[in-house]
Image 1 (cartoon, rainbow, N blue to C red):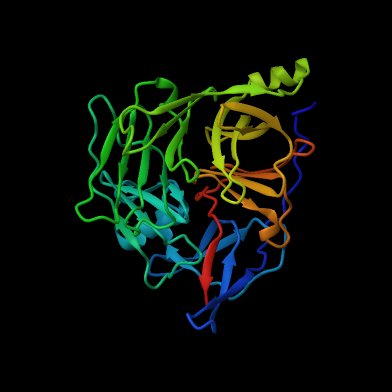
Image 2: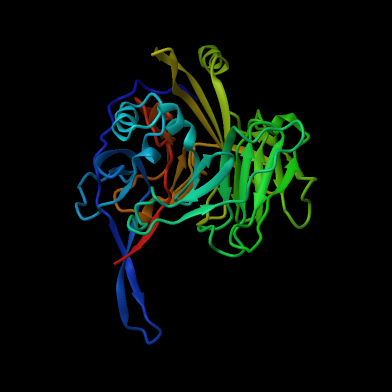
Amino acid sequence: MSLLLNQPSQLCLRKPVLVVRASAHTSNGSSSSSLLQIPPCFIAGADPCGAGLGKLKIFYATGEHSSYDHLVKKAPMELVYNDINNPWLASFSEEEGENRDDISDAMVTIGSSHGWVATLKNGTLRLQDDLNPAASDSDPKRISLPPLVTLRHCQTEIVTNVAMSSPSPEEEDCVVAAKFLGPQLSFCRPGQSNSEWTNVRIENPCFFSSRVMFSKKHDMFRITGSGGHLIGSWDLDKHKHTPKLQKLRYQNLPELSKTERQLLSSCTTSEHLVESQSTGETFLLKLYKKTEKIMGGVAKMKTEGLMVFKLDEEGNAVYTKDIGDLCIFISKSEPFCVPASSVPGMIPNRVHILDDNEFSLVKLTDSSIDSIINRFTVPYYISPQKLYK
């Protein structure tokens, strides 16, 4: 059974149409407005349109290739291009008479969840819906979280990722989790008055560089340990400082040739935990990447292999090449699953991968991959968003 991936082909990155899903109804049953669902998408850039704003280049991961010309979404250019080395930022800072270092240090994007992008500025996390295609660009929502508190021998300057328990941080019971590189994991409820961070020190170093996700099924935040042999779960009410731990037992592992084993052993490995809301299934993905080329002194990584395991409550991790009707989306956003049948044109049993320098599509049936190596300044997949008209 081969996990080696075929030679990459060029992917078609064109804008598919929005999907009409249903009608919103009033209490007496009459139709009040059309409900459109924006399929899974990502921001590929922005065209400057004045006043520091840009018209977003939105691409949808559906498999269809027609354009939807009525969706016009604007956002601050600094959210799309907040790298000090970006040409647009350099020209903008010169026009505005500002120092490039000041602009670069002012705000950086650090993650995304449910269409909300997380930014870090002067030690304060903020959630913004500016990059959500379904959100208003004339009235953007920007929620500042409480000032970060750094635990002793920890740091809060490098954020691994951000995850949310609800689609909106404005909901009273929504919990936001921020995972920092190292031992610190922090939680807060921004929808409640006088919200403050609850800080947890993680003792096991296997979680230090891992990402956090929210499990609706277990109603807990979960982290996969490095190597994928342990999952830690945190419930703020039951075991705030002592996580619930689960050991994984791998089953049905594929038989690899010597060449395949050598290739995968030479790769950098990362683990990603994702839950399907439609089926209740939990999957663990092992992603293998290797340096493809070096550009400007920066190593560009390319996906060389992917293994998908279905998890059960007993801790069994069963290797599979068939996730049914699902598509999985892995990026620097919180990972998510989408039923392919819910989006016209979407092909099931595939994994979509987006990173700083790679856009890839893995076909699980034959383990083949299509990749584009390029620079992506907003490497976040945005889960399906509802849009009322």
